[in-house]
Length: 286
Image (tube, rainbow, N blue to C red):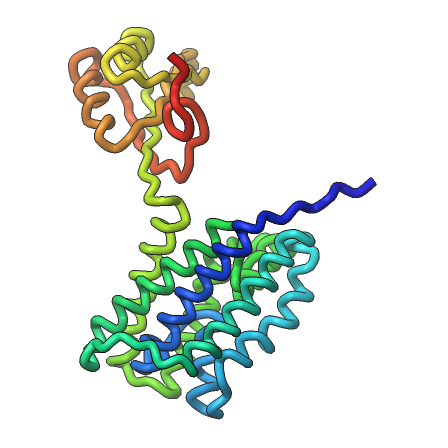
């Protein structure tokens, strides 16, 4: 018996909102100021510049074969969200070309690039956060990752590079530099929106005074710690390795504890994209 697929109405609403924000920036900043774009959106701009074909149409047409490719990759639920995101994106690109809403930036390309990155980042972040995509090279990246083991990030980078390089057919180096600024802003904003501005650090501590340090972290910072069992590759000695998840401001407090208890402790601090659990996503029970 197949498991029933459940869709969340909120996801459809937020994906539509995300594609609307993305499309608004795409029309009013990328198209209006001759800024290129990576991926399928960039290809639509090339077709628009060379053949005057509306990106709203090419966005949809170019994604149709990719939908077929993505059937086995995303599954039914993911594919529905992807098709929905792509269709709403095309609709809003078409709509904003006909609705006279614009932001006067006095032909300042730098402001245009910054705003293009911000709108694309906010819109894209909302789409990704609520389980959607807008199709495009994301599908190609996932396909090559699962079929041939290529890292998705590298595939997307190569695809974006090829599209941007081809965009030099219709834009000059100056506008390409502004496009790269927009792409950088997009990469920063989309991560913030997707994670909700989440900033957490993981700290791995290798020390012989693990019990004392764990006790002080619990008492002074009110954070729990986990013992991971490790073994020195050279010495062969067993060690309890401390792992603790902290807010950025708590990192300094733990460093002070280490300085007092064991200045020779080996410490590795890593970025944590998400934490689900007591003290982070729900309150500690008192």
